[in-house]
Length: 135
Image (cartoon, rainbow, N blue to C red; front, side):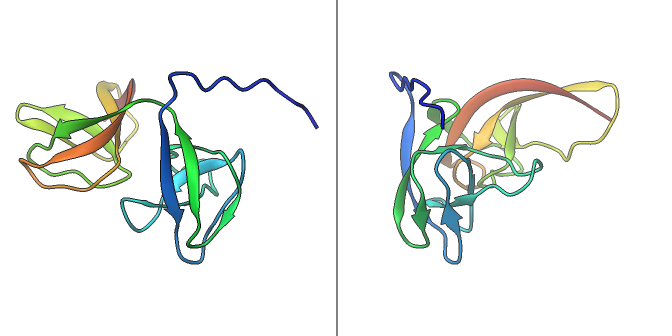
């Protein structure tokens, strides 16, 4: 077993509850599961992870997750925000990104919603900008 050095200075660490019927596994990816404060261990490459578990835990236990980026409150725009969805920016705020489809149009993704909300709400969004090509 490797004993890699861990540096968590300036990291964003959140505490969550392991979702009913789920587990958390030390060192594995964490996904939102069922509620704004509930998580489970990622099980597929298509899962949109919000961070890495800092410990193993069983359902209903509290567990820390080191996030991939800082979390900021953002204004929700037309179309709303869904917890665990990728976010794009619109003229009136951030909203769920359109479903990804192969193509040549570049779309910017600015983060992952950590909470759900409707236009005008302010919700947590993990900042992690990137681009993707879509139809």
